[in-house]
Length: 346
Ligand SMILES: Nc1ncnc2c1ncn2[C@@H]1O[C@H](COP(=O)(O)OP(=O)(O)O)[C@@H](O)[C@H]1O
Ligand SMILES: [Mg+2]
Image (tube, rainbow, N blue to C red):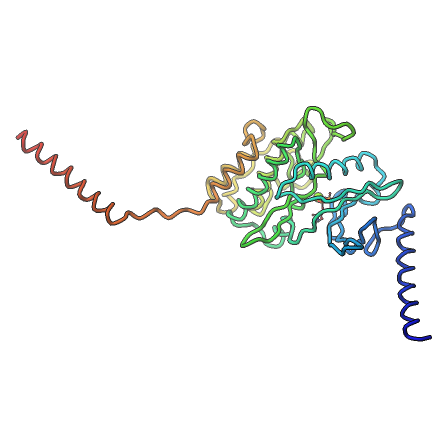
């Protein structure tokens, strides 16, 4: 056999084996993993996993463009409520469209037993979770910069009638930029639509459902009561606390105890753990107030405060030479006037 013929046969065999793999994927229950093709995308490697989803590095088979592809975990792929929630996640992100929120470019609803998945811009950086694990507490300036960007994202989320409900370090992605980070908020899997008339077909959780992560849950969320956007402001308070001290405000042995602490315990002041600027500490503790009405009422308020606190301290302007002379002459004139007044009286 000539080399050229061997080469052609090899190529054909490779194409055939890829076809077999792609065909196998359309079989119900076929395992998905690196090398699998889903629609227009080939999965390359897993890059992240949470409670319900799995995220892969993937590439467009024709264009070669690298993306992040998120699908529900295999055992959850046929759960109708989770599929609609998954769809709500993609829709929420698209409607909010903010620079500090990850961009979703496509959603594919799997037919039959095929998985549904969506495509996101691929982000390069670290999650806040990893950063805190590897580097411990952040400087107050870095915490305020990340916090302000998160608050900006939340402002956009809330203005569109959504609540995120699952703010935590694993859902916050940090893309290195200049000497700091550009924040991208991820994972709207627990997002809730709170507008008066939600579009038909979108599932909304009922009162009594416990949604979120206990360590970041506001008291009203921990009690599974009706919640509003202020639960996100509470979670932002927990995040700020954790960024500046390296610890969450309530570290307990069981999840149940964490929930109880969210409802009843007063957090220790962050400054008892590490030096924290007074203004920042006050803001963090206000975000952590048990009663929603005692917290800052809008994310924009938190953003503005963080940006103001994080402004570089301007050096006091020095008086110019003329200003100094004017002050000296003014003082002499006042002293002379007093002298003459006293002398004339006497
Ligand atoms: N667009 C993305 N680019 C890069 N990594 C991502 C992207 N989206 C998610 N990840 C990674 O995948 C992890 C899980 O994603 P997430 O959306 O939070 O899924 P889940 O709903 O399962 O928690 C994240 O913590 C992050 O590490
Ligand atoms: Mg997540």
